[in-house]
Image 1 (cartoon, rainbow, N blue to C red):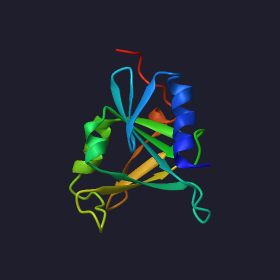
Image 2: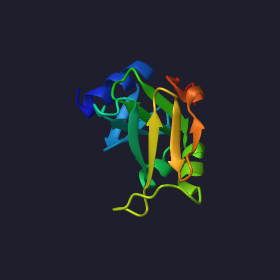
Image 3: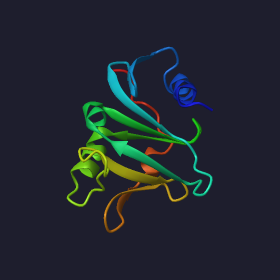
Image 4: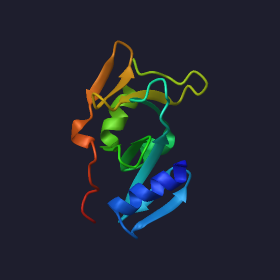
Length: 134
């Protein structure tokens, strides 16, 4: 499945006929800005997915990480993403120092975002729904 197709399938499930695509990974639903990211499955590590946190992420209200399929996703408030981004030992993208790198483990439903195995449990965000319209 292609990235844009997978994003559209998930957004149609979460907000039928209510989502608008602005650019790249930025969408809007009922006044909420969504930063929607897709990561394909890597055959050698099928339960691990890497995502970047960048300036676009921090401008959104919610971050959606789609892990290989619209059937496996997490919806996080950007307040959680800001904590990861601002952590003193956060993993920096070696080519883009203003980006941070995280790894989502879909078996444990956890994300590791800083040296020393620092992470959080994602179970509360697994297959979450969007908040009611404002």
